[in-house]
Structure formats: structure tokens, C-alpha cells
Length: 233
Image (cartoon, rainbow, N blue to C red):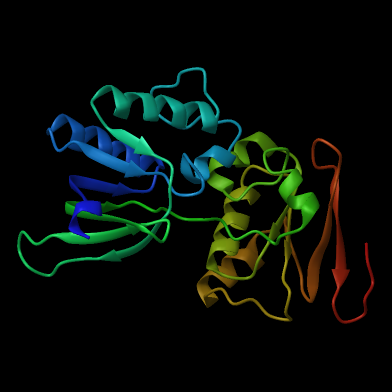
């Protein structure tokens, strides 16, 4: 059984910017890192079309191209990048202990060091039109992509602190921000609610859900539905 267990110095879980940064440092320290990418190679940034706020890209770049650059840099120093999903990690509590990892439910690995850089995943609604228009007007990061919609009308879906923060940020650069709240109240902290309500160009629509994102290649608008009356507009 032990013959089927791969033994490595350093395992990196996740292939976003943090994972590749860790890989570059680990490789330069001669730790011979092996990275498992997860299902979305390159992480969440690969869903972003234009990246203008990352140092070193004077003329901007796009998410997939940037992640390829990071991948090539990590590989240049000796990182081995593998496509696969880590499905189980048993971390040792002993100093200098060996950690046990399972990949894709079957492959066994023993590692001296495990770096977990699994990042975050945006919580989308799951509409076909929403997924189709990611990068064409649908975004999960106001601070990343808000600049591209400067002076336009935008919609924020959500009622928590994140939605309130995104809405108030966008209100500074966009013409109007409409916040869609599924219930008849916001879940955001009172301080964030006060900030939203005091911002003149933010309109909050309660009991309102996103029914469809409209547009062929880029977003032209949205269709919303009142979940009390059933009215759509």
C-alpha cells in the first residue's frame, strides 16, 4: 500500500494568485512544490475579462492571460502544476509531522508542508443568462470591474454587508445604483444600511428578485419580479 503513496516536500492546493505566489517562493527555496489546481485552473480571476489594477501591467491585461503569466513564472522555478481536485486533507498536529492528502478521491500523497490557497468563489444566482454574460456586464467584484461602468446605471443583487459595500462604492462612480433585496428588509449591519439610505443615487427595491439578465453579448438591462405581487418589469 505504501508503494502507491507519493511523498513530496510541499503541496499547494489552489491555483489562484495566492497559490502561484506561494509556488514561486517555495520553488525558489528548493521545496520542489507540487500544485493541484482544482476544477477552475487559475481561480476566480479567470472569470474577469479586463484587469487594470494589478501592478506591473501598464496597459492592463485580462484575467486568463494574467494567470498564465503567473503559471509560467512558477513553472520557470520548478513548480509542477497538476490538474486535479484535493478531496481530503488530514493535517498532522505534531511538529514536523507528515500530512496526508487525497486527490480526486483516490490518489494518496504524503507531504511535509501543505499550503492551502483555495481562495473564494463568487455566489452567483445560477441563471443561464447571468452565466453567459459574465465578463459582458455581469461581475462579482465592484472594486475590480466597477470602473468599466463609470457613469452608467448598475444593479446590485443582495442584502448583506457585501452588497451594501459594493452599492456604496459603485454610487461614487456610477449614475444610479439599484439594489435588489429578496426580502422586505436588508441583512446588512445598521451602519451599512444607513450609508445606503443616505446615498442619493442608490434605490433599494424590496421583495424583488432578478428574473433574467437581458442582452446578447453584453448586458442591456435586467428583468425583475416582485415576489409578493408577481409583477415583472
